[in-house]
Length: 505
Image 1 (cartoon, rainbow, N blue to C red):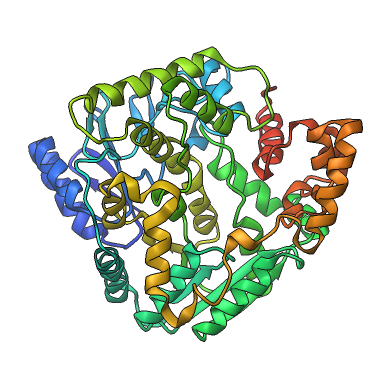
Image 2: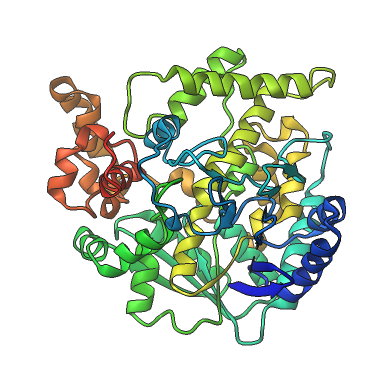
């Protein structure tokens, strides 16, 4: 998916998930000739694809990210070059202590930092040159508040899937990661509505998970093939110990973000079982719809209390109890910037704007989007309908009242309701973390907490969790040894990863 070219004295690398390399290359060549950033900026503002561009030369170099930084771009301040893979940088003698602190608490580095002081990560929607000049051509900030209709959202989605229909080659297979939730279900519905026939749905995890039952019902509604990939503790341990998994970590992850393992096990088994073959395939998931539509928003009104609540939610991945004042100061500074920008605009909710901008530029673009690296590692193509610029612009400018509790989105889904896929089939709010054992385990954990504490009491029962294969992928001994530091599935990988890169938390 990365094409390399040479033009004049520039080495050019272009990543583009919709394979319009030549179209982008022609504009890049014009930019090299003219060095007019404004013209390039206009071109990028209109470009909807997922892309990343690197132009390296001896005189001056440029790094360019798309509106979501779907492929990370890094800049070495010493060598004055840009690179896609951070694995090229392994200078652990120059550790950025604040970056390490945020990574060990959140799972990613913030504010363009990486673990290495002289390596800079470009944020979303950025043009940067090797002289340090940065041009932002896209930010997740609202320009206005619009009272959109359900028809407006439907038209937006139809435009996205109509475009997919145009550029996907005949015979291309679409693999949809289908869960019990509403986001991937909406994608399934739109694929059906737009007459995509070569669709293979897959779900994965523990057998007692409702994901298996519910996703199968959804696939049946649309007459799509469905595969359930059972992943138990034994299989996940086998995969994690494999050379393939080790290669995956070595190739993509070192200095800015922990590995996203969400789809890796499923892809491994899909290929092992030969359900996945060839390279003319496109993987689709429901990433970021929950964020964009308001699921992550906090309702705390006082700014200081909001920031504290936000910190506890996002910077305690290893159950750290001590609050880091440097991170709090960064959050307060970012909140103040938002307040200054919107101080004269009435009815603009500063809290929502702050939460949205941070989530978009930090967690989503730096950790959530790393799931795409798994597809690339297995030599597969990918598409992200809910990360398309049209869809993003819809939600960043919608009336704030429609974001609270995802009101507009939920109402739209029930109104759209293709083949009664939303009204007749339950969604993830009815899915229990312990499946059929949910009631009994919560009762036992509540009793046990009086003897061993809440954290240990809950974590002792994660062996029955629907994601138990993640928790025990490193072995039972590793899990028990680190039981106090487990908050969610990413906690276990973060601990292992920090040990791998030989940094202690």
